Length: 286
Ligand SMILES: NC(=O)c1ccc[n+]([C@@H]2O[C@H](COP(=O)([O-])OP(=O)(O)OC[C@H]3O[C@@H](n4cnc5c(N)ncnc54)[C@H](OP(=O)(O)O)[C@@H]3O)[C@@H](O)[C@H]2O)c1
Image (cartoon, rainbow, N blue to C red; front, side):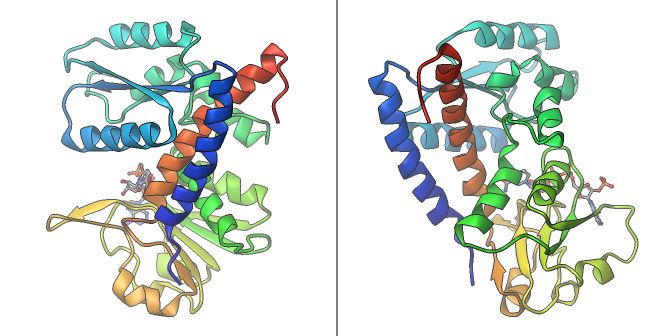
């Protein structure tokens, strides 16, 4: 069965729309600010998709587009201004940044309460300690799609290929929180196919087309394809979908799988950030 990320994301967006209408009745206009530095065609497409998604649910969107030769200090100063701006609830810095910038240092500039990507050390630490922070959107989207399809996670052996700070590592923590047993694989791992074949839930976040082949997947496994790759003008995932899909019980396609879930989780994090601000002010909100 195909796990339809677009359908689930649309359902989440419908619910968020209602929540945003309620916020607006309280004179709170959720707002996301995205920083882009330089020109990168893929980034421009990703940002446009985020803008469209924001507009579809009623979140105000602002793009701060800076020139390629902007210094890191200048970018950080612009972020600090948005940290101080009470009308802004979410801040994203579109990756990749130009080579002269240290991405992780830039992310740290974002106020954790507005860090809707969940990349700051504070939010990562909260995830590690199971405290309430803002959770990284792609990992959060993976768990959500499984839950929306009522797929049990507890006790399952989850194998994640990829250990990046934005996908593999936070996703492993989220699966642990759901009481799964987790194995993480990476480029130095040995006997990858033998280990992936033991997975009840196999997640690929590698970034290589057709990396996961049929012989690496257990019969009836659940396969989540996080990869986004461009091949012959088409966007495809990491999984050889044609040959793997017949043997697994559930699989996410690319496109229309994890990608739309990631965007829905960004919107959700903006709304969470708004709600926490209200709660802090002492206004009741569930
Ligand atoms: N759908 C979405 O919304 C979404 C969101 C984010 C990312 N993505 C996509 O997901 C993919 C991964 O993204 P990322 O940012 O996590 O990438 P990344 O930082 O490049 O990480 C890739 C991971 O794959 C591992 N890897 C590379 N070659 C391998 C091999 N031969 N065997 C086993 N592991 C191998 C790397 O191992 P080492 O650590 O040893 O190098 C690394 O941990 C990309 O295609 C990206 O575009 C999609």
